[in-house]
Image 1 (tube, rainbow, N blue to C red):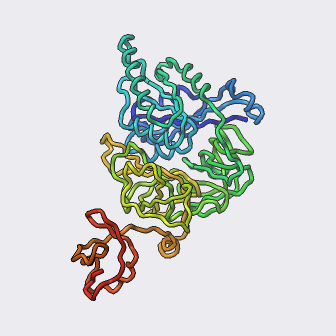
Image 2: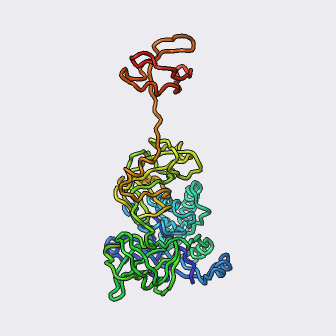
Length: 477
């Protein structure tokens, strides 16, 4: 049995990610190394690619792994696109990884999508190795040393402000193989046993689907949680179908059981693979359509545009990205959402608000398939892809999901969000040292002035008081 670590290969377009995946890998899946005809035609990665390398267990994990029945360590590489327009695919791929290889062109240094990949990695995993690729393009030793020293210093400065743990920097050439063994040794040193919860209901993120004549449909993907066995019943929630698992393979080897973290192909009884190019296979009745959700918002500090209530963002959950409107509110307590609690409406999230507990009501334009505690990432993907500013605005986990399509009538009236309101008027005259008569707070025809008796008022000169009583019929108090 293998301990499987999913390693995302991310970076700016044309930094050599696919070449690195090919150089590192010993086993290729059906969707590895830009096999997509469009990828070959355009010369760039357009979709996720998967391949693997199996190595001996590193010394620091051997005893613990052996006790858990693991015989070897398997790295499953997730080769992500680098082009700015494919950010949806990058975000989707990053949500299944345990560790990241951030690939940087040694000649060009940090580029716009390098920065976005750093942010995505920070939201999805905290372990990273920085790979300075294309050493072969820096032939002059003096130029090479100067470029690498400058890059290491710049990258170190960037990482010091982020939430990654200590990230090694390894300079290589994926094309010639220079220092590849050093990179594998560094991956061994950084390897760990990820936290896996096999007791949760089975969840499988499907990234490719194809039919095998006479056998069924194969869904390839990554187990997000839980366990599944051959013969188990699973559900395809997008199609509302339940089917049996006929067989399973991991990189051409048959298995009876797969668990969280495993990269596998599941063969299930026949359905049209064209109806599920990408999506979810899960335990029956575990995943349903979500029309709205509450998340505790974690804003991205590099996003410089305002995050305002009623604004629309692209929300990515798993492999789905849909437009949604957000409504911000804040509250006290332990940071968890509770429907009976009262919350204060927030017009806009400012940098000063980052320390407080901010929630968002997210209303999806089209319902998504999701589950409790799923990670969501909010972005502004309709901005110029060539602009240098960050497009990723916030992240969060689904703290409360709403599966009722009529939630505007059933759920929203229960959500207690209030706004602070003020009224202003002028002092008409002073009755004595303690008593004033004010006008303009209410309309002359207002008949609800008595409701405000007892509320506080403050004067522009600093004195404070309360509304003691109404006065006359002209709106005075």
